[in-house]
Every structure is written in structure tokens, then in C-alpha cells.
Length: 517
Image (cartoon, rainbow, N blue to C red; front, side, top):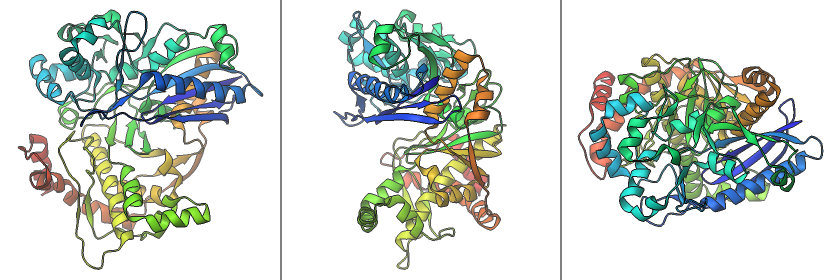
């Protein structure tokens, strides 16, 4: 038997088939474009995404079936994006993705009417236009004709289940990202639905990650090279799915996703809701392993900074990479100095993630002089993102969620020098793993657990194969520890100068300024 995990992302989807020991035996991927018809809008054509998902399942399962037929499918999905369907199941809207900000005004005003603290206590999340709740409110207000025709509101997990011939069900972690879901009662919250005027019948039934949703009908299975009776299980939001695939099944360790968006995702035994996390926009919701909860700390700039540097300043390395059949990022990172930079960077080259949720902010490079080299600027950019993640780790520790070590996933995890830099800044050991497509691996493990009955934590111990752990270097870690208090002052100090809309610094930012001085 084999197990297929599919990861439905913002820019593409991928499917990987794993054997009974967690070795990848087949994979397929497709890309699709993000539509940006107006400033602040970002959409996916849901029908195009579903076609891509079907293609990667067919391609990966077809290769895998030659040696071992697929018996279960798990689905990892980007969060928040939903699609409205009519009574016949036809799509009425594109899916508004996480960085679509058209509902920003509603995210500012609606929580005041409902009660911001009340909303946080129910959902474990703080208001932001990325979340489904506010996008639904926008749809009701701006497109009432579409809202009247809407009979179903599905995220991509449920959309794919429906395309596979099943009655959709949404995993607890993905339901949590809608801000319509009670993380305590594990149901769609009736008070929020009433305030939004959204009938519960329009939403899929919520189930724990790993719950069998149904079996793929034989006719559909044959067309996708799946075994008869292939089971589809609820997966989850992509970040906790990736954390599970990295082997995060207990408190004290966290996934460090080193991709386009950098993300930290730990596991802990009980929901944690307190003023510290509320002020810092650090959510709490269900993890993909039973009985655990998680949060997500993230930098939207993340690996985008490395891409920006390559595209703007790295043309010689791009040409060298073509000539030598190498990766341009690898060449750039090799050439940067192996010591802390003399510069400091505020890494908000996109809207910030946690802890500030600031869409009107700008980045900065401080300390430039005529002797500054390209390599020093690159290192400072990478340090800036890493210091931002350190800020999140420190806030989590202050809230009682201590992280002793990390497991790195994503494209950046393949570069040892980049992993070493992050270990030095965070002053924590970072372990890399054999399979970097951790989201696909995590939901494939859920499928295996559902069919075989083996606990997913036990499967993770067998399937997640660790590579050597990178330890922080004491001298460098000490340098970053000395620099960190100054880093904490950058945002409150520079925001009035760099933001296009200067605003009053919030109490949390005032507290950061006072504790850092």
C-alpha cells in the first residue's frame, strides 16, 4: 500500500506518494497564477486550482500504482481562502487568498461591534482581513447578488473532496482559520454565524484531522489511478500539516518553515489564550495531531527578501548559475561573509506578519557606508528576518510557550549556511529532515493512520528521518543576543518615519520600546 498527500498552495499544488516506510516514490506539481484585478485584491480561479489538483493526483498516483496502489489521500490546504458555490455546485467567486486585503475596513470596524475580546476568546484569532469571516462580510456588502445565490462556502480542502465525489468535511485546523469556529466547542460558533447572517448549512461539517471523510467512488478512482476504496481523510491548514510532517508531535519543538513566507509552528497540549498573545496577534487553534493545539508566527517578507536580492542585485550570480547548472541562491549565500553583519535591517518589505499585523509599513537598511559590500547587505537582510522570528519566539516564551529547538522545512532548509545563520540568531538547535515536502508527508501520515489504526505519532517516528542538527555558535549567538534589544526598538522608532499613514503606536509597541530601552 501507499499513501498520497496533496498540498494546495497559493501559487501551485503538489502531490507526493509515500510507501509504507514514508519514502517518496512519486511526485507531481502544477503552478497557477494569482489574479490581482485591483489594488489589494488577490484571487485564485478555483476551477483552475481544482483541475491542477486532479492532474497532480492522477500523475503521482499513476506512477506510484506501478509498485504500490494508493489507499488513502490526505489534503493540506492554504488557509482562509473560500469559494462560493451555487445550488448546482457551480463556482460563483474566485477564492480570495490570504494576502487579499479588500476587507481591511471591515476587519477594523466589525470586531468593535461584536466585541474584540469576545471574538478572540471564541476563535483564538485576532481580526485581520486575511480571515474568511471578513471576506464573507465583504461579499455580502459588495456583491449581494452573489451572496443571495450562494448555497455553499468551501475552502480548498472541501472543494477537492467534493471534486473527488465526497460529501465535504472541513478539518478542525482549517475551520479555525476562518474565524467562524469555536476552538473550545469544536463547532461553527452560532453567535458569530448569527452576527454574519450565515446559515450553518452553507458550511461543511467540522471533523478532527485524520478523520475519514469517505471513499472515492470507483469510477473516479479509476480515472485517477487510485485503488478501489481509496479513503480520503481530513487534513488541515498547511502550516500544522507541515509541522506534523516535520515530526512535531509534542511540546517544546516547532517547525521552522523556511519558504517564501517564513513560519514557526509549535505544538502544545492545551489552548493558550492570554493578553500577551492577543496583543501580538499570535493565534491559538487545533493542531493536526489529536489533543494538541498550535499557533503560527510568521514573516510575510520571509524568503521573498532573498528572491528580491537575487533579482535586483544578483544578476552575475544568476548568469553564473546558468553556466554552471547551479542554483543562484546557493552561489549568493556562499559569497556572503560568515560573521554577523555591521548593518541592521527592519525586514518589512511586505506587510508585516506577527506580531504587528501592519499593512502600512516599510522596511529599512541601517548602517550603510561606502565600504559596505553586497554580501554584507545580503547577510543583514537574512539576519533581519531571523531577528523578526526571534522576536516572535521571545513573545511566545513570555506567554509560557517555550521552544527549545526547531525542525527546518522548505527550500531554505536545504542550505546549511542559511540554517546555521538562523540557529545562531535564535540561539536554538535546528534539525533538518530528509523530506522537505513536509505538508504532503504530514497528511499522508494521517491517511496511513486512518487506514491502519497506527497512531500518527508512532508513524512520525518511523517516517520522519532526521539529518544532522545544526547547533548555534556561542560567539555569534552572543552577538545577536546583544543586538536583539536594539532590534526591538526599530519598528516603533521607524514606523512614524516610514509608514505611508503614520499612526499612534499601540500599547504593545509602547511596551516593547520601554522594555528594550
